[in-house]
Image (cartoon, rainbow, N blue to C red; front, side, top):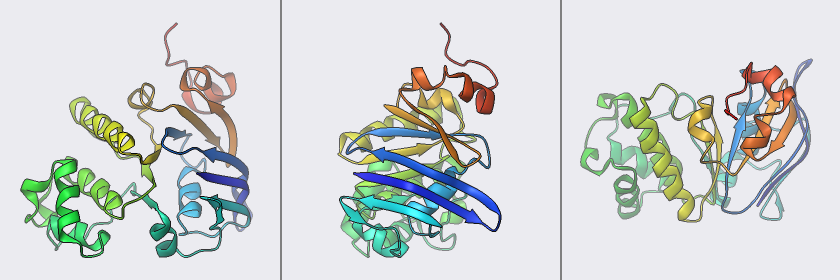
Length: 232
């Protein structure tokens, strides 16, 4: 579905992404992890068109999208959430989703029901609690009818019960045929959910594979974990 080929991004002398090669398959959940500053959000920004790579290519559905604008990439089927939600605080919950749904109210209401916010559709967004804001951010990403959605640290700061709610929702999203790339620091939430995992460190892809294998690799422990988190 999605390929990054020799993808690099420089900010002046800083090499934020260094020759990244990865493939995301149709209808899978993959994890993208790494320490702060490793290049995770930069990679998402390049794929979704907010940043243009310094070199390399991004192929989606067999088409080169490397230089396309964000709105064209979104229309092709790639959406995302943001670490810091970018919501219209003075608009209602429904109005926020309507923007992403292209004004289709029926579809926007379906999305709100899906994520459990239908009863709050007329609430002003500024009145929502932290969990509801996260759910609305996800609803907006889903409202563009994506084929693949990048989820950027959406469970950070949530309680274990709230995290479990999101995990079940992500499983349901995949069950409906949407591919998920999940960036997260709460690794225990990801381990039993993602099918494959990519690890970035200082702009380099240092590991990929099944979570049980990746999280045991010395280079991953040294660069990111500090200790093993999977008990033998």
